[in-house]
Amino acid sequence: MVTAKDRRRFTRYKNKSGFCLSIAGNSFQAATVDFSLGGIGFFVEETPFLLPLPVSAINLNIENLSLDINGKVVWSQKENSRLRVGVERESIYGLLKHYLLSDILLDLQRSEKKGILEVRNGPISKKIYIKNGNMVFATSNREEDRLGEFLVRTGKISADQYHQSVDILKKTGKRQGTILVELGYLKPEDLIWAVRHQVEEIIMNLFLWENGEFVFLEGPLFSKEVITLKISAANLIYRGIKKIINSNHIKNAMPPVDTILCYSADPLNLFQNINLDKIDKDILFFIDGRRTIKEILSISPIDNLETMKTLYSLLCARIIESEGKRLIGDKIHEEMIKEHTAGIDSSFIEKTEDLYQKCGYKDYYGILEIEKWVAQDKIKKAYYKCAKEFHPDKHFSFPSETLKNKLNTIFTHITEAYRILSDPKMRKEYDQSLSIRPAKIESNNAEIARVRFREGKNAFGKKSYAEAAELFGQAAYLNNLVPDYHFHMGLALMKVKRLHEAEQAIIKALAIDPFNADYMAELGHVYLQLGFSLRAKKTFENALKIHPSHVRITEGLQKL
Image 1 (cartoon, rainbow, N blue to C red):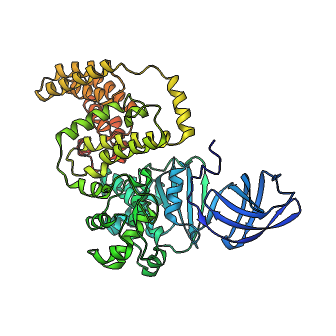
Image 2: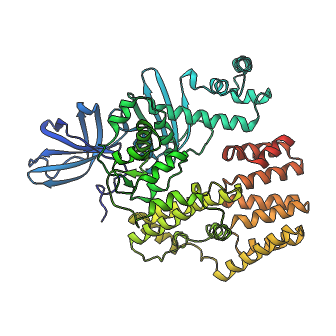
Image 3: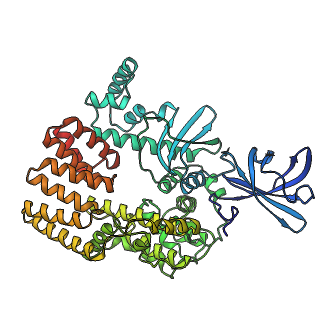
């Protein structure tokens, strides 16, 4: 049985701080063992009163950690002459000097929390909006962090244009970005670019803070004004730490120079969305589970401080660690770093297309290509193999945005499969859900659908659009869970001016894959041809939030 003690979702910090524990008018000497965002563990001298512990709610005041915690006892056990107790906190808050900002962001992500993380330093307050663990927006009360100032600073608008927009803002109450677009000073795609980079800068600059406090207010994101972005925590941790200019901060935070570094043993840590600089990829290549930090510093092509920043950022992002199990195989690091230099392999593209289609109807076991009865360690190995092959960052050289989007979809599916199946409790619930699902598509139907789809693409390439539409339609009929079948049918129907049918086909594709910018872009063009300008504009704007530089979206907005 998995106990509450074993299901630790938050990074735990070792700590020994004495404090007085008061329960029902009785006082006992206690000392902390460790603490995290989610709870705290401590020892207390065993007494008849405390064994078994008669309380489910408890208050702890620990001065050394500046914590006054309300929580509940989730486990307790005897250890020699003492009682060890685990308390789950009611709320998440603390001081940055006691918690790493990187751990806060990654722990909230892994626990799939929803709410607002507010970080304060004196009069400065920044808020990070978090949905299902992912950072989707951020705000700040600093003038320099406002959108208008950011646009002037990055050269997107002039000071005169900024002041004109402020005057209109005061009179109308409209959002400044909307005003700048209406005045023609910004294109919609420029606004989306600016909002994303403004939000990222707000968060990254938090890594420059050495002091401050934070609180996480769990609950729905109540503001309708919040634009939902997709921001990688690991990537912002990496870039934020690289901005730190205080060399002592980095040196004090690093492990001793004789520490050996290796890759994380946890695939969820290893396969994160992070865009490394070329030199940093070279430094990552030096980590082989044998070299010490001192040895890596001696062979690094950049100076010691910049090398330590890189190593520290990778440690904070949990991609590497200073201790732990070695990964499967002796040359994993070479595979991860060197494979990105390989050219585009046509067989890999075909394999990507095949797995992308399977994502529409295969269960999690089918996605990872494992049997339902396999042991837990086999699940980890299967995920590692899939993630290593299909990680989007390894294939950044692909010219096709559509293929990159498919890789993102595949990677999301295999990561979700690993997350569910690697947890015994969630795996059991998932297995039970499979027994009540509709029977999966017969394999022969799925294979025939793939054949029809390939035939449809050949016909489309020969400009036989009516024939292509029929073949794509047959594929969608045989397997209606693959979004690309519906989408390509919509493309063919557009060519023969059957626009209302094209609209319905692409809408079906979006129902299966709702965040596909390619699908949304073409739907916007369908609306343009139908004369639905407002509907087209809204569709293009929603697509821009997902893919700010998409060519077809830009073309559509220019036509509008």
